[in-house]
Amino acid sequence: MTVDLLLRIWELRHPALRGPAPRAAARAHVLGSLAALAPHYRAGLALALRLVPPALLLLTGRRPATAPPAALLPGLRRVERLPLLGRAVRTAETLALYGGLDAAAAAVGATAGDDPLRLLLTARGAGRADPR
View 1 (cartoon, rainbow, N blue to C red):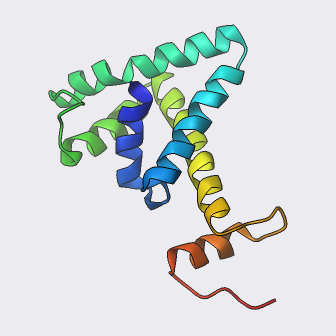
View 2: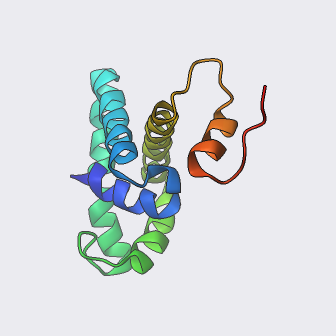
């Protein structure tokens, strides 16, 4: 499925999407958002996302399912520069990040009033949270 291919590439770009829980949440968020769209928008976005593997094949000369990360990342950057298709890919990536970050926040017991940056730093061990 195209979303799984894109998630594989996005995991290389965004550490917040690595791991089974954030990946599953990101996938669910993208697919859930697609399902919530009006039928004609859903069809258009789904069609655009289905064009990503052939576009990657044409732009990189490699099959996306077996291509190494060194080919996928630059290939996706080239796809993102294409009109309409690039917008669809960037939109889906944004949805995936929302889902992945929500999963990361839930893993550390976030509540609605918490500072997302503070939670991410605490969850990743990259810094200490300021006591409140």
